[in-house]
Image (tube, rainbow, N blue to C red; front, side, top):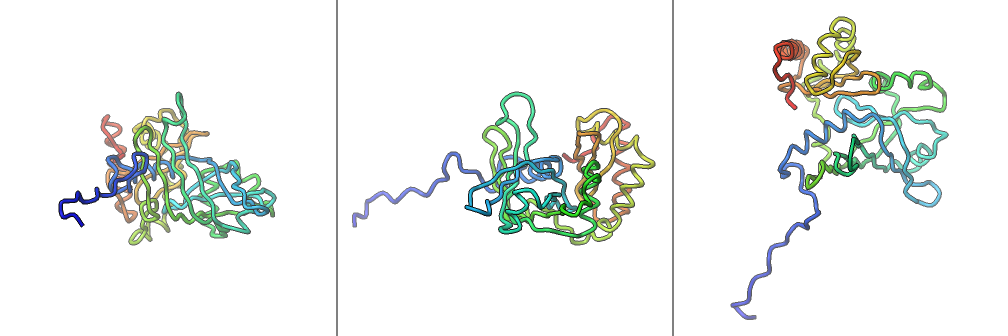
Length: 264
């Protein structure tokens, strides 16, 4: 071998290959979680039970407290029959908007979707989709939770990243009191603090009234007004009800004073 031979060049990442989220030059994890929490309907791709052909359909989406995607589906639907045979699937979250559709952020989550009878799942889904109460208890309907294996984020031009399951979902360790107290806190805010909810929504660019809190978690609040949603992150994560009360007061005071209330 020629000692003067030029060593092989190091392997380079292709120009279109996304970076891992931790290496991305933008907040890929924050944007992905924003899409998870904020999008109420998306494209579900399942594997056809007859011949294995990819089968895409439109479904409504909510999230569990850790960000796990939730769906309510009828077993009469093709995608439900597909999942009962093979739980592997992917779910596309896209906000859409004016102009080029490909200029807006979107997130694809891959994983396995299985049925769940957990009461909390029902509560969170119906809070996010109140009209689904009309048919949620029909005998052919059931709730599904998608356990993610990976995420692929396209945040717009030249902003792409891949995410692991742990980057998509929140670790709820140490937040058990917040998890168990969520429904009481949600009801209290909706009954007594509609003005504060409007302030929180306005702080992330969603003006108007009629906002209701549909869920909360260690990172933020999920708001709904008609068909509009707003995800409001706290200035810093919280793990218990005492910290939650303090941060909500701080956020409301900051909003009334004209300052930023969100960590987003």
